[in-house]
Image 1: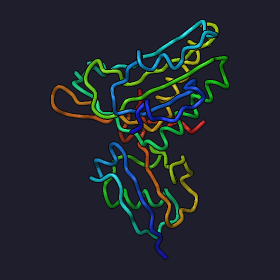
Image 2: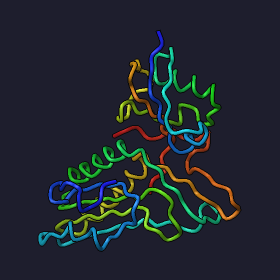
Image 3: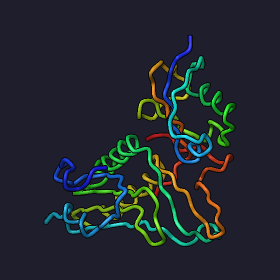
Image 4: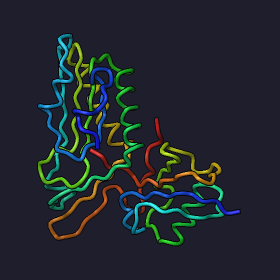
Amino acid sequence: MNKTVVVRYFAILREQRGLAEEEISTAAATAREIYEELRGLHGFSLPASRLRVAVNDEFGPWDSEVRSGDALAFLPPVAGG
Amino acid sequence: MRSPSCRPSREADAVRFEITKSRIEPAVLLPALEDTAAGASVTFEGRVRSQNEGRAVLALEYEAYEPLARKEGDKILEEARAKFSILGVACFHRVGRLELGDLAVWVAVTSAHRAEAFEASRYVIDQVKARVPIWKKEHYSDGSTGWINCAPSGPPGPAPA
């Protein structure tokens, strides 16, 4: 059964997606699978190995089960300072 | 965005990390760190420079994932307090569009003696640059732009501490 998750995009991913946030319906189990699915759809330049993932505003694991209602954010390499 | 006047106090402002869209004003911020036990006060100012890797830069844009950036910033300041014998520590990072010379990030540390203040300020800026989810887009003189560190190949980001 599909789950509904909110996905937030920042910086280069936000520009490549053309929006900052969306709600998606997916059968993918983990954050990694969700990113790969979205990368296939939208042609993101960055592979998952260059990103970190946040689940519900905390840094999270790529390979844990994502639950319906979770909010994911895929984070490009940071460059503060 | 929270302004200094309405922000709840946190340990009398001795530990404070903020993301701000407004100009960073060190002269306004430093008094919160005043402490007669502090024999040393070290501040670091990171400013927008006109060149990067041989290209002429006209302006920068910083973007933050604010809820997580605040949490990670707070964690870094707490780590600095645990690692070094310091009295106060603060870090402000600006977001939005910045022009050449603008202050992008400001770190201040007070301690009884200078060594701890130097070491802790270096720790804070290094960790902020490596870990806090903030991104930087450069605008170049030829009209092009680039997100820093976001080439498709390259090392993965460091693991959270």
